[in-house]
Amino acid sequence: MIFAAIDIGSNAVRLLFSNAFLQDGKIRVEKATLIRIPIRLGLDVYNSNKISKERASKLIKTLEAFRLLIDVYKPESFTACATAAIREAVNGEELIKKIKKQTGINVRIVDGLEEAAIIRASDDHAFPAEKKLTMYVDLGGGSTEISVTSSHKLLAANSFKIGTLRLISDKVPPSEWVSLEEWLIQFKDSFGLINLIGSGGNINKLAKIYGSPDAMTISVDRLQHAVNHLKSFDLKERIEILGLRPDRADVILPAAEVFGFITRIIKADSVHVPKIGLADGLIYQMYEEYLSKKKKKKS
View (cartoon, one colour):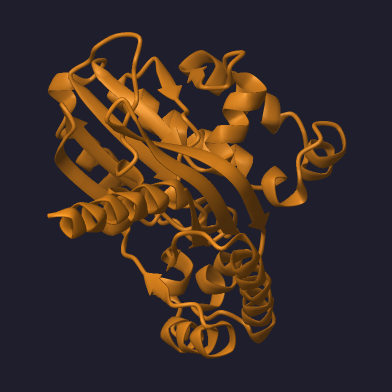
């Protein structure tokens, strides 16, 4: 059964079509098609607090195209969410209304804690060694969402204004790093015993280039190697020699440094990268709602 989700992020806008089904009593979600357009709304917002007319126009045109694809695919249902850039833009609400009027798409603005909860929705990960806690770290262009669970029960969650576009725009104050470190220290009794799950396009790419052969794990040593290796190339060389897209080449290094910062504090030996994100969690939630409605009809 096909479901669709639109994720309007600070760096890119994504449309995901996935198959959702039950297998052995568990919900399984398999990606069918993913379309990603790097509009970079955050570059406007983190520098001027407002989304420009040019980027707003690009966003609306992208969503018009997404709507056409959704009409062709005819998923069981679809949803759309916007994160840090639109929720912080002074004209964010105005843009949401314009999107509704021109595309018919209802876009829901989610805060950092809800964003973290949506990503946790597809929590079904197996680790080679049982550890005390599991920490989810989703790094986007505008923010970093972190959730900590134990036996699938949420212990704590927080959102920090540390994102790759903020970093390349030099808009992350030292105090935000201090806040992140102080928040992580509450789990010091479990340092070295935390399974770390990373999500977001940059950690996916880091795992693919520098991580394990299956691109599902990157060790801390390899993460540090990635930082050193990427620093040895300028932006143009990362595009021409490493083959990175322009919209990835400038943000992948700060992303590696953010994950390096977190792994050092919590004494993690690796980052597990299952390639999940906000859109995956949205589809998982939609399928859960579908099953719940189906069950009510039967009863």
